Length: 574
Image 1 (cartoon, rainbow, N blue to C red):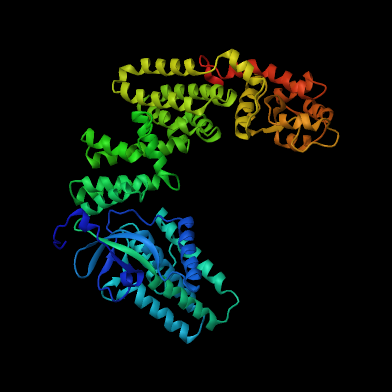
Image 2: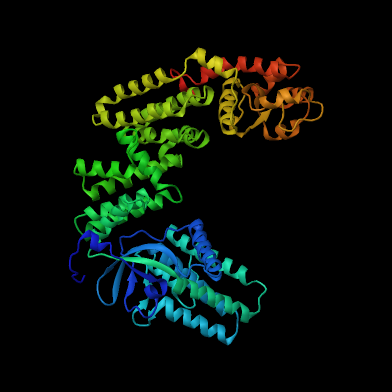
């Protein structure tokens, strides 16, 4: 890279406003090149929609007398290597999206099939997308996206190519979205009028969208700027801020490349899921609750305090992320027989606060011990959150502290037995007692997912040993139905009890449809004659009428089963 005189941070912030035409157009000799280590194109449809809304909204405002003549797209950070190359250290998403928009304008213009349109499409390509046949395109994407972007967006005509990774899919979706919204704007117009509107859109994007270009002397200066912008309220996402920091403190370009590779692995593993949530859960699993400290500051402080090398930290993140995704996906290949219990906890009951504790347990305990912990967690969650509806902050406090203690104590594998005993004792001590459970079941109103989980486990417990029935294939049945037939009485009293545990049973899918909304006498006969499930049979045998008193009585009868199923000393039925 060329040597640029050093400057103070204050001077580094001196910026120059440039429109997109000045950055990508032919008057700028240098090509903008996204460094290899940067992430791929990450804008999803919602971001591209917002970009489009900003552009079209500005067009309308600027057409009004006294309206704005420029629209500010925010800052970008540039590092000039030579007369021919400028490294785009920040701003890739906006300039790539502008390029996608230019390519959509070019392609749609060609469809108009008139000479003037063909000439304009050629000009768009020459002026804003490519520099020259010898130097290539105005914008060169990073290592992961360079070839796909050049072939499907910048090439004229573009080629159809199947996206291979997430960033490619984002590029494809951006092009499809922008092409579609432009076509809708032009629908029904004759070619001449359509060409006029396309030229106006092109001119707006080229000349009226302005960015503040911040020059830096080195990549390290760029990373310092990102952190300073964050401190001044221009908030970057935690993952981007963390990656910028790791790049800044990396020893050399080779280490940066490896950091970028590990980071890309995490992005691919996470897919559409929130990597910020993973980083937070990873931190909590190691150090406990963040309290009032923001995540990036906590991570940065820990790295510096413990003298952790940035490459070592990123490698560790990637390994933790692989385990985290296996938990999120309740991956049967890796979790094996524990997978259904993790699924119940994370997916069905949606207890996200359990993930830090699951992560610590999964990574540090043997599979058999991990299974014990997951079963105990289901017992605790059922008692604490589902049945008793206690404050979620108390659950988080217990889970986060246990996650940290596992990390601390399991440095010595010989401590496994003591750690397990501590986990069980802590959960048991903080869970509601059997007497509290009995009282709570009497008033228990469930959500849909909670009801499916609770009733399926209770139905399994009630089933006799002689009958082989797949409870998980049965459906949840409201005895007093959602849409009651006219024979049902006292609806005002009954409707609030629709999701009461006493009003719910499991029933086969076909039987569920047949039972439908009929009055209880019809349902009762239906349960008794057709259902193989002991739970439905029990309702038919025990009750001749169905009202608020029978619902309360049934809940009372179910309470001992709830205590038996969600039992720390025998959690085999969870």
